[in-house]
Image (cartoon, rainbow, N blue to C red; front, side):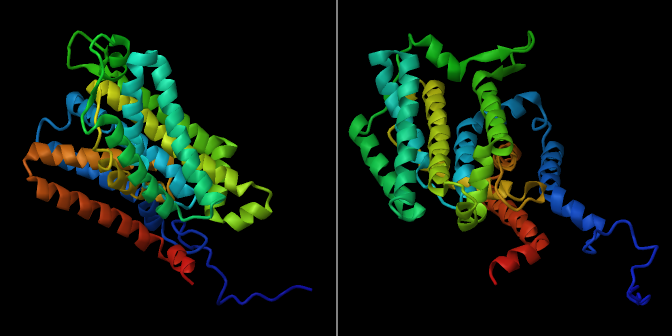
Length: 348
């Protein structure tokens, strides 16, 4: 039997094509998806007008070089945040891996030292993951405790002094200090660590988006109970997330040792807050609202681009911190405003 249609409530034939099925205007959908990227681009354009030295290959290369270790820490941390937990030990993991690598180089050579130091980073992540899952402990508590443990180990191993890498270790130093010359102009060169960062980023992009590793970790973070009843071994993939976090931070520690030709006993704590800022800022990129590897990379780049631009313009340190914090809050706040329905439903 035909059902009569109330013409007063039927959608008109001339309904605007710019509205989605939910009635959302096209401009709002575009703003939701590209708003954060627009902020990044407009900020870069603003700095390029403020100083002629900002939009240069040399400055772009300097920004990339300065963000190498923080970017690796942030990319690794992304997996843990996706899984629904926190890792406060990533900064100290960088320091510990750096120290282990510097200590082992004169004993076993640079390449075995790199492997063994990355195994140490993997062990740190494994301990964190096991305690959070099978130990049923809070991720914040476990990794905060691990942070203090690693800090004590670092001071004990070094006695509070830096550990230097011998100048003759040219192959190892090339990893962090080498350059690929693009032309006869010495300024047109790409640092080897930048290339390593690009390779690792592409690898993580593939792992997070094209393999079951990324799929299962995201499924666990979205709804651990549903993942469990779907046959996904939840504990295993939470542990994998922590291992990926520590391992990627460990790669940053090895690069840091090579770049500075030494290992410092302290300083890793400084990577933590910047990494969390980059991860949550990156969650607003492309309007996804959840952390993802590409967004994290852009988040780190934005933070260091702002620092570079404000330094060139001549802003004092306090103003740079204020501006960077304000931009971060505005970007995340804009995403929260544009996704207020979804966010509100999470709190019902």
